[in-house]
Length: 299
Image (cartoon, rainbow, N blue to C red):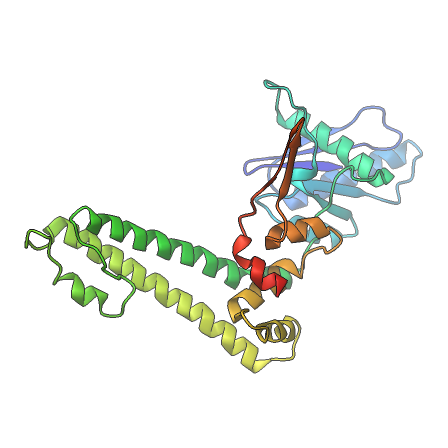
């Protein structure tokens, strides 16, 4: 069975021994309804004299994450999550694309993988709920840092229009210095612009406080249980010159916790290698977005 999942509905397709037709059913996003459908199709196979001892189900990695695979495994159903980029699709410029066709494609891919065909597709390692939760602080901090950079750049651009430069919005007294700014003509900052900058400053201060809270919580966890689980590895990596606590925590929970059998994917994630791009005479390596940690990983 394969499930083509979307936010509004799930399209379930299957192959049942002893039944010539390939059943197809659209459901509301409901795990209990999916389990009842699995049991119904299993009973149909049993009725025609084909006892079913194994049920395998797969769906593409996406918005819903891995909770459904964990939920089904708890109920004795063999569940897998297919890596989306490993599914080969037709390359016609204008090809039909519907949920029904996508489910048929997933079915063929899944059957090939179950037969053991090499490099037919790749399965994503299903993390536990604790492993997923351990990644949230690092990812939240990364998003907050990006938001902080956007606000700082927006404030710089707003002041640059007035000819004001060298104002550091991340300083503690930046909100007090904002009222003393003046344009090169000697005029104060216009009131609407000043109000906009004050609102940006308030958002910036709030985001910086959240970043500091995440960092304090991480350090507190390392102090309370320094030798427990991944904390020991984080402390070990942090001893390497040039690797801080943030980088060590990211490496442990994002890189070293991945499926290390796919060494190329891990290397591309870390910035050690690029993504190959070869067609005809053209051959190059696409730049990796994580080149910033190249030196840290190499060390």
